Image (cartoon, rainbow, N blue to C red; front, side, top):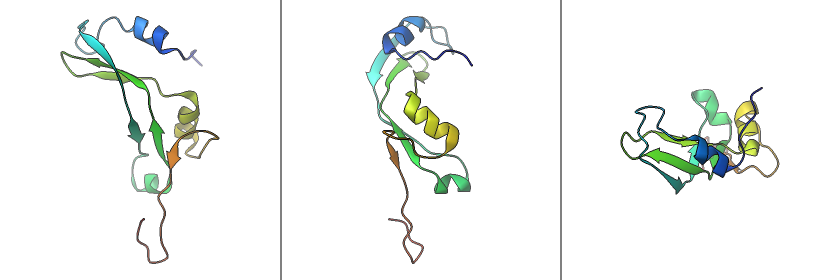
Length: 98
Protein backbone atom coordinates (compact mmCIF):
# COMPACT_ATOMS: atom_id res chain seq x y z
CA UNK A 1 0.00 0.00 0.00
CA UNK A 2 1.27 3.48 -0.82
CA UNK A 3 2.46 5.59 2.08
CA UNK A 4 -0.06 8.19 3.17
CA UNK A 5 1.00 11.76 3.78
CA UNK A 6 -0.21 12.81 7.24
CA UNK A 7 1.21 16.32 7.51
CA UNK A 8 -0.74 19.06 5.76
CA UNK A 9 2.53 20.90 5.26
CA UNK A 10 3.90 18.01 3.21
CA UNK A 11 0.59 17.73 1.32
CA UNK A 12 0.46 21.44 0.55
CA UNK A 13 4.05 21.54 -0.62
CA UNK A 14 3.42 18.66 -3.04
CA UNK A 15 0.42 20.41 -4.62
CA UNK A 16 2.27 22.79 -6.85
CA UNK A 17 -0.18 22.86 -9.73
CA UNK A 18 -3.84 21.96 -10.05
CA UNK A 19 -4.36 18.37 -11.24
CA UNK A 20 -7.24 19.54 -13.45
CA UNK A 21 -6.06 22.77 -15.11
CA UNK A 22 -2.37 22.96 -14.05
CA UNK A 23 -2.88 26.40 -12.49
CA UNK A 24 -0.66 27.45 -9.59
CA UNK A 25 -3.44 29.73 -8.27
CA UNK A 26 -4.44 27.66 -5.21
CA UNK A 27 -5.43 28.59 -1.70
CA UNK A 28 -5.81 26.55 1.50
CA UNK A 29 -8.96 26.75 3.64
CA UNK A 30 -10.32 25.06 6.75
CA UNK A 31 -13.30 22.82 5.96
CA UNK A 32 -16.08 20.68 7.37
CA UNK A 33 -17.25 17.77 5.22
CA UNK A 34 -19.95 15.15 5.84
CA UNK A 35 -19.29 12.02 3.77
CA UNK A 36 -22.30 9.79 3.05
CA UNK A 37 -22.12 6.19 1.82
CA UNK A 38 -23.84 5.80 -1.57
CA UNK A 39 -27.13 4.11 -2.39
CA UNK A 40 -29.96 2.93 -0.18
CA UNK A 41 -27.58 0.71 1.79
CA UNK A 42 -25.75 3.91 2.73
CA UNK A 43 -28.74 4.85 4.88
CA UNK A 44 -27.73 2.06 7.27
CA UNK A 45 -24.13 3.30 7.55
CA UNK A 46 -22.72 6.22 9.51
CA UNK A 47 -22.24 9.72 8.14
CA UNK A 48 -18.51 10.42 8.46
CA UNK A 49 -17.48 13.95 9.45
CA UNK A 50 -14.00 15.24 8.60
CA UNK A 51 -12.51 18.65 9.27
CA UNK A 52 -9.51 18.76 6.92
CA UNK A 53 -7.67 21.62 5.38
CA UNK A 54 -8.70 21.87 1.74
CA UNK A 55 -6.68 23.11 -1.20
CA UNK A 56 -8.87 24.85 -3.79
CA UNK A 57 -7.81 25.88 -7.28
CA UNK A 58 -9.06 29.46 -7.65
CA UNK A 59 -9.14 29.11 -11.43
CA UNK A 60 -11.19 25.94 -12.03
CA UNK A 61 -12.53 25.10 -8.53
CA UNK A 62 -10.97 21.66 -8.15
CA UNK A 63 -10.49 20.84 -4.46
CA UNK A 64 -8.19 18.34 -2.74
CA UNK A 65 -8.31 17.04 0.84
CA UNK A 66 -6.67 14.35 2.94
CA UNK A 67 -9.11 12.27 4.99
CA UNK A 68 -7.62 11.53 8.44
CA UNK A 69 -6.74 7.89 9.13
CA UNK A 70 -9.53 7.25 11.70
CA UNK A 71 -12.26 8.51 9.39
CA UNK A 72 -10.65 6.73 6.44
CA UNK A 73 -11.00 3.46 8.37
CA UNK A 74 -14.74 4.17 8.81
CA UNK A 75 -15.01 4.67 5.05
CA UNK A 76 -13.15 1.38 4.46
CA UNK A 77 -15.28 -0.68 6.84
CA UNK A 78 -18.59 1.16 7.11
CA UNK A 79 -18.38 0.80 10.89
CA UNK A 80 -17.53 3.35 13.62
CA UNK A 81 -13.92 3.59 14.81
CA UNK A 82 -12.85 4.86 18.23
CA UNK A 83 -12.46 8.68 18.24
CA UNK A 84 -13.76 9.07 14.66
CA UNK A 85 -16.53 11.64 14.24
CA UNK A 86 -19.59 9.84 12.87
CA UNK A 87 -23.35 10.36 12.98
CA UNK A 88 -25.90 7.54 12.87
CA UNK A 89 -29.45 8.06 11.70
CA UNK A 90 -31.95 7.02 14.34
CA UNK A 91 -35.13 5.27 13.16
CA UNK A 92 -38.16 5.45 15.45
CA UNK A 93 -40.69 2.63 15.98
CA UNK A 94 -43.05 4.33 13.47
CA UNK A 95 -40.34 4.27 10.82
CA UNK A 96 -39.64 7.99 10.93
CA UNK A 97 -36.14 9.35 11.16
CA UNK A 98 -35.03 11.64 13.91
